[in-house]
Image (cartoon, rainbow, N blue to C red):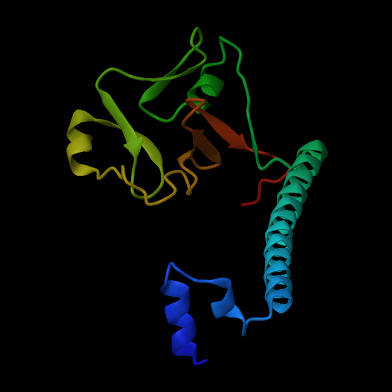
Length: 169
């Protein structure tokens, strides 16, 4: 029987057992079982490789944190140390001791400039400066700096400083 006839038999909803005499049922079942087994093994292998990569990544991160290899460190200041408090926030923001985060100073607008620097501008400067609101697929892929050696962390609303042990200029 030609391949064309086989296809028409498969498409025909009234396939009878005697029409399929030319197909070796055991060979076909073995082939389908092998195909299922290969599919299951492939899915398990992809899952296993993904799990191993994730596990290695987490273990590496935990070990780096335990060694103290953090590139950026959070710091706190005394209430009367004005120089230190000024470093907690970018220019145009001030530290709110009660809320524990930076707040915009009245008359300033803050945004991430296209140079990946988080800055605050007066109303006159804000018309000149271009803020980048759409930064691509991963909005926080680039580090937003407050000033040299300090990183702006949006969700904490404060600056972190470069770890002195890892600081290279």
